[in-house]
Every structure is written in C-alpha cells, then in structure tokens.
Image (cartoon, rainbow, N blue to C red):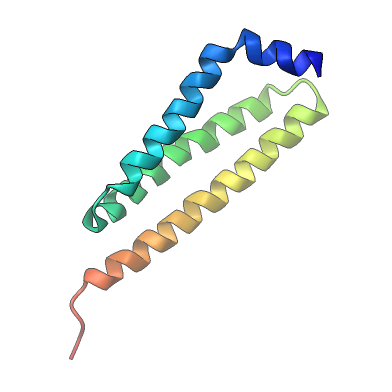
Length: 101
C-alpha cells in the first residue's frame, strides 16, 4: 500500500494530466455531430494501426516472457479494434449510398 501511495505522490502531475485528458476527450467526443463520426472513426483506425506497429516493435525487443505476452495481447486487441472500426465505418458509409430501385 505504501508503494502505491508513493507512486501516486511521485507522479501526481502526470496522473492529473491523464484524468484531465480523459474528461476533455469525453466532452469533445460527446459534442461531435453525427456527420463527422465516420471520418473521425477512419482517422482513429489509422492511428490505431500505428499503435499496432509500436506493439510489434516492443515485442521484438522483449527481454522477458511477460513483455512478450503483453505485446502479443496488444497486437491482437489493436488488430480487433482496427478491423471492427473499419467494418463499422463501412456499414456507416453504406447508409449514405443511394438505394437501387
């Protein structure tokens, strides 16, 4: 328990920034018009692709089994997020196409 308290006291500025950014992100996303959701999802999918590349690089430099397992999980979850995001984006774009009569 002392170690946890010491960690929070040592990194309180960084923790404050993370908490503040979470609230700011929620506030910004909640006010995005529905028309912009598709382009924003496509952009976030591209950014998550970069995260996958980073996880692969971390796996390549893993020095112990835990790092390798966490990197592998990050790659799997990131890939699922990207694929799912592109599927949802594709479905949303289908809604804007003209229907055949």
